[in-house]
Amino acid sequence: MESLRQMAQTDLRNVNRKELVDINDVEIKKDLSQRERMVDFVSQIKNPYCYLDRGMVVKISFAGENRLEDTLKKCARTHRK
Figure 1: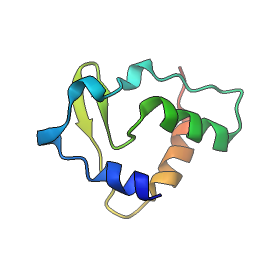
Figure 2: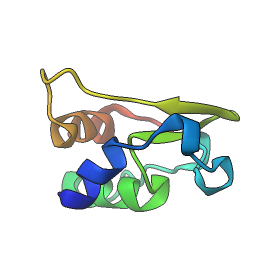
Figure 3: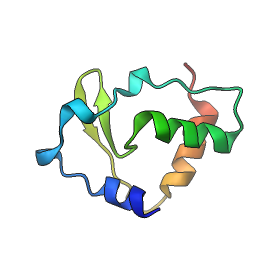
C-alpha cells in the first residue's frame, strides 16, 4: 500500500516518459481470477496512477469516492482486449 501511495504522488514535471508503460500494451487476462487480474494489471502497468496512452502522459487521481482497489476491480471486470 505504501508503494501505491508513493506512485500516486508522481509529479508530472519530473516523470521520465521512458519509464512509463503505454496502457494499450497492457493485456487483461480474462482467464485469471479478479484478484489475479488486478495484480497482473499493476505488474504490467507499473504505476496505475501515471502511464502513457498512445504516447500521451496520463496522471489520474481519485476524489475519494472510490478506492483504487475498487476501481481496479471494476476495470478488471469490464475491460476487453
